[in-house]
Structure formats: structure tokens, C-alpha cells
Length: 432
Image (cartoon, rainbow, N blue to C red; front, side, top):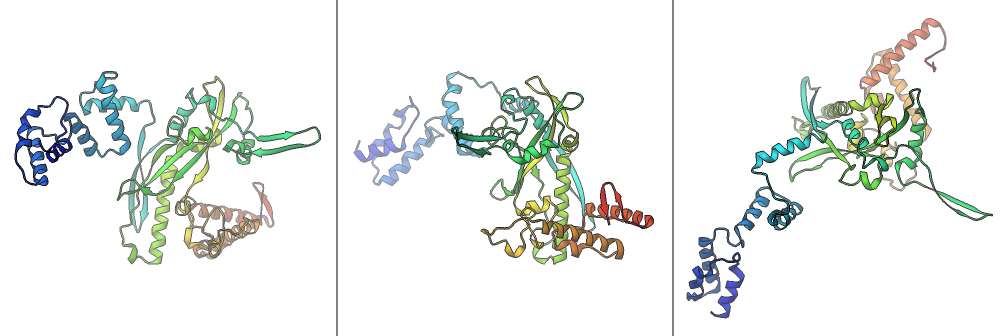
């Protein structure tokens, strides 16, 4: 056999161990002029004898077929190949599943040990038509209880706020520096904790259960955009809550996509605002359903016996909202880019947003201005029956149900004052 033919044979003919090579012995003795033609001939003959060629074995072809048809990523494909080459094939952990139906049956039993998804739907009016949105979510409280009942997480759970200091010094000079490395070492946790009773009449010690909520739009596939919503337990250390294992963040659901039936390029300014308000209403209603199990418990608490044998009263709540500008506007019922102060956090005027190195203090003056603007809008709404939308819009406010409820409350208070003939205090507030 010539060297060129031998090279082609070694490169292209890779059979499984023990393959019957004698069947193809004539391939190397056939006089074929060009190397390319010889290579094509070798492939054809090999495929006729072994349909899984150029894979070494039929099992190799089966593994590759599963990976390709299942669209497995590199990590899952690597785990599949390593599993087939180690414990599965050597008998260390034999696969007993017969088919996909048997696997689904076992998965159904496994789901009973975790938090299952619930289905819900909400409705909102848009352009005179009621639109219904369906979504699925996990109950946050069900997930929280799995963490509180887990004995492996109990030693790491942070039930109370603390203060950490780095100290060094001598007899004549002392030095200390405060260290803030976890949420329970900051001041915000301590302020909320101070509002809770230490120990109530029944002997329960009240504890705060702060959570971090994150959502943002992202590509779940190359063409589909979704809004995953993730919760993390801030009462667990960062190396646990930021990981993907036990005690890590959990996907509580996806914000349902809200599609506008109209062409965005053909919408007027009023229609754009109308759709933005409709989208905001959908966001608010979805969040209301999702976090309904935390509403009462955040105020009154929920008694739980922890793995350490102690009974505690837990008050869950959202401690950190990780949102971008668009989601923050929808979640806070604000107007975002259409307002003079688009960001609900920093309250910087819209013409100063590009000054990323500027020093803007969230002073009392703007808060007072915003409060006086709200009062002015209420007066317009109550006295002249004119729409307060234009006044509220300048300060990133909507004429939503909450505003109208407060306005009607003010109306009743004003009526009481008029009949009383002077300034009076109602509910501890000086209304004038």
C-alpha cells in the first residue's frame, strides 16, 4: 500500500474496535488516480458497511443524535458523554428508566418535594376592550418556608441585624472602622428591625426576612424576549444566595409579554401614553397576585418553628429592587422618560441626567415640591373638576386609583373642617 493511500486509510477509516476490516481490504488495492476521488470512494464504501460512519461505534452516533436533536449545550453534552463512559457503562449506577414516560413519572414525584408553579390570570381595559393576560409563578412564601425549614441552612441564616468593626489600638490610642459586607450589617435592616417588637406577649421573637427582587428583559432564545423575575434571600450569606445550589436565587416566574396590537410608528402621543399606562397596570396586577402571600405576613408576621428549636415570628418584605429605568417606572407607576424627574430613585432633573459625575443630593426641597404639587392637583380635582393629569405628569405622577382615593379622603376632611369652622387635627395630622 502506498504512503498516500495509507494516510487516507488512517485518517478516514476509524472503525470501532474489532471491526471487520477484511471486508474493505480491496479498497486499498484499487487503483484510483486522485486522492480526492479515493477519499470519496472510501467514505461511500464505509457508509454502506457501517451506517454510523464516521463515528467509531453505533453508541457514539446515538449520543451525538441525542445531543443534536435535544439542542444540548456544551456543558450538558459533556456530562452526557462522560456519564456514558463512566458509571452508566461500567455498571456503577445502572440506568433503569425504560422510556420517556417512566422518566416523566419520576419527575412528577420529584416535583412534590419542591415549590410548584401556579397559574393565574389578570385583566385590564385597553382602548375599550378588556384584555386578559395569563402567567405562571411560584409562591414566594412557599419558597421562603423551604429555606427556613432546611436544617442545612439554619446555621447560616441571619435572623437579626448586627454591626461589624475592625478594631486595633493600644493603651493610648484606639482605632475602629465599621465593616458592611452583608445586608444585615447595614443601617436599613436595623431601622426596620427597630419597628418590630422584640418579643411579643406569646413569647415569639420577631425577625425580618428581607428579599432581593430582580427583573429585566432578556433573550431566552435567539428571537424570544422575556422578563424573568428572580428572588434572592438576603437573610442568607452572599456566597449561598448568589449561587445556584441550595439557598440560591429562584426564578419565581416570567412577566408576561404585553404586545401592542397597533403599529408603534403610527401611534400618537396620547396613544403612546395610553399603552404605557395599560402596560403599567398589567405589571402592577401581576405583582399584586404574585406577592399576595407576603402582604399580610409582612405586617403581622408568621410564626415558624426553626430547625434550632426556637419559635420566631417572621416578617417578609422586599428589601432591594434591582430594576433598570424602564422596569422601575412601571413598578413605581411613574412616567419614566416623559417626566421632568424620570428616575424615581435619584430624582435628578431630566436635563442633568447626562452629568454622571455630578453631585445631586436628594434634598427636602424637591420632596416638598412634589408634595405641594400633589396637593395642588388635588385642589384642581376637587374644586374645579378639571383633570389633574397635566400637573401630575410634570412630576412623574399618574392620576391612578391611589391618587383619587387620597383626593376623596381630602374632600371629606375639607368638608369636616368647613362645618367645624376652623383648623382641626384629624388622625394626628394637621389638615389646613
